[in-house]
Structures are given as structure tokens and as C-alpha cells.
Amino acid sequence: MANLFEELTWRELVYDATEGLAELLESQPTTAYAGFDPTASSLHVGHLLPLMGLARLQRFGHTPIAIVGGGTGMIGDPSGKSQERNLLSSAQIDENVAGIRVQLERFLDFDSRANAARIVNNADWLGTVDLLTFLRDAGKHFTVNYMLQKESVNRRLESEEGISFTEFSYLLLQSYDFLQLFDRYGCTVQIGGSDQWGNITAGIDLIRKLRARKAHGLVMPLVTTASGVKFGKTEKGAIWLDPERTSPFAFYQFWLNTDDRDTLRYLKSFTFLSKEQVDALSTALRESPEKREAQRVLAREVTSLVHGDAQIARVVEIIKEMGYEGRPMPGAQRTTVGLVGNDGRVDGSQLESLDGVAEIIHVSRPYKQVSREWRQENTLVEIGPGVVFGGSEIPIIAGPCSVENEKQIVLAAQQVRDAGANALRHTCAMPPSTSCR
Image (tube, rainbow, N blue to C red):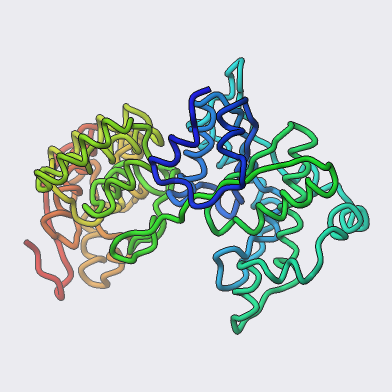
């Protein structure tokens, strides 16, 4: 078989691994899994590393399993967390699980005859096992001393808040997941971030004690940025895979703005580009950093994986119109579009698909009334970073009217025009305390 471990090594994706894993992956097809807790209805870019790990496994002939943690999600993993998570209801978790499933299907092949991927929900077994059975089958094999040695637990014990028994038990639940996947699907490998090492080795120990078999683990380095900012976080929050939470335009922009110092590492981690392709981009970045060729390839590759090629074409066209092709872009703007005095010909469907549009507001009052209220009470400023009013009367663009923001708002206004609104005119009306460009 092709050597997956060597592939992961040159990509700098091996932080630690159990002895013998490299030989196992090279010698025979293996089943491996990674877990995704449904704390939201969408994954974010921080989940891409284990997700890409599963995709690489499958491309090298192994069988991936993605666990959507409907059971463990009700508890919350203390790994890497300074305080306890808010517990979600069963209904919230079910909704989140459904959203995450759709995103996993973009990366994994569930129809392969040789090594079809699986999505499983650990609520299928954790939700049915009774407490006494769980304590007998799993709990008795872990001493409290053993659990206290785990970094995720130890760090929380040293904090002022401490750790609840609920989160303290998470290690047992994840270990039980590994055992169940071993029994049900012959899964012998678990992958995750480096903060998961303690949980993974606990599962390996449980399989060894109860089944007398050897299992393996591999953890990848946690992604950081050269500037010290947590990866995947911006001033506006997380970068989500769901286009309703983070538009494909803003998603592309996030990768396009990658620091030169991080770009090569991200190309290795988040794309399927070959070593030769990455080396060529490394040369381009070193010799002509101002062209940002490596960043543009990174943005295109990752956005294509998450949102598809059709969205790439639309995003690139918008960037050309805004004049930012080949150079960093300012912070993403999310525009609220209001259809004022709409005569019914504009339904907002074209606007809803426009990158950068946060929401559509249908306003029945005519333009003059809305404009007067805004000038007098300044009530519409809180709607969003930009407000586009359009419809059967004169559209109004309300800002802040920065150069960058205005260009994107104009694009949205063009969509109003194309949808059938008449008398399009660009007007910048600001409250007295703000100056227009």
C-alpha cells in the first residue's frame, strides 16, 4: 500500500503516534475514526484538520469513520477548555448532528465499494447503556489516579473553577466509544488533535484490557498562527463551514489573508496538493511574496473543498469587481438588504444567494418614511455594518460608507436592480455624527 504515514510526516501532521502504527498503515487496510462533538449546527475551520485526516486515510485505501458525538456532546470534552461548557438539550444536539452530517459528506466517500466511509452517532450506544453496566464494563478499568494524570483533567484541577464529575467522566465515555467501534466495525485507530492524546490512549488501554488486542492512536499538532491569534478566530467570531454562518466570500477571504509565515503550513495541512506543488508555491512565496500566489491557491483549494467550484467562480468575480485581485482584502462585511416599499416584483431570492448578504428585510413602509425615521432616531444603524434599501421606490445605501464596505454594498444593490427593482440610485445617508465619503 501507499505509505500514508510518510505522507502525513512530510505534511508535518504527526505530533505523536503509538509504536507500530506506521508499519500497520503501510501493510494492510485499516479502519480509523475521529470524533466531532455537535456543540453547534456547523463545523468550523478548527475541525478541518481531523476531517482532512480522515479524507487522507480514505484516499490511501483505509476506511474512515466519523463519529458525531450525540452522546458525548451532552457532556462536553474538557480537553483544551478552561471552563465547563454549557450543556445542550437533546433537541439542540439532534439538530446539530443533522447539520454536521451534511458537511462531512463533502469530504468523505460513502459510496466506495472498497472502503466506504461511515458516519455513526455514539448516542446509539451511550444513550442505551445503563449506569451500572457502564461502570462495571468500563469504569472499573480506570483508577482515579490514572485519570488525574491526564493533562486535560490536571489543567482543570489547577484552575479556580475546577472540573465537575460530568466532565471528569468524559475520558471514560470516549474510551467506551473506541471499544464500541472496535467491536462493531473492527476499528483499530483513532486520530485527533494533540490535546486528545490522553483520551485516545485511555481507549487503547481499555481495548487491551477487555479484548487483549492492540489499538493505535495518532494525534496532529494543534494549528496556531504566527501572530499568536487562535486559528479560525476573527474579530467577528469563528469561521464556519456552513455558508449561512460564514459566506463563501468571507470564507475565501479568510484564507486569502493568511500571513506569509503560515501559508506553507496551511497548504500542507488543509489541501491535497502534492509535495511538488507545495514546493513550487513555496518558491513563489519566497521570490515574489507581493503576488500572493500561494495564498490565492490556498483560498481556492480550501473553498472548493468546502463550498464547491461554482462558488469559487462567483467569489473570484466579486473580488475582481471590488479591485482586490492578488492582494489582501479588508475585513469581511456582512450586509443587510432591506426591500423598502416593495411592489412584489422583488422576492429577495437573488439577494439571499449573494455573498456578503447577511439577511433580507422586507419593509412595507415607503422609502421616505423609513429614511426620515432613520435620520431622526438613528434606529436602523444597528441592523448591520451596511444596509441596502431597494424596491419600487428609490433605493438607499446606508453605511458606514468606507471605501471597501461601499463597494460590496453596491454589488448587493446591483442584485436589487437585476431582480427587477426600478429607479436604482446610490445614496449615502448617514446620521449627523458620521461623515459620508
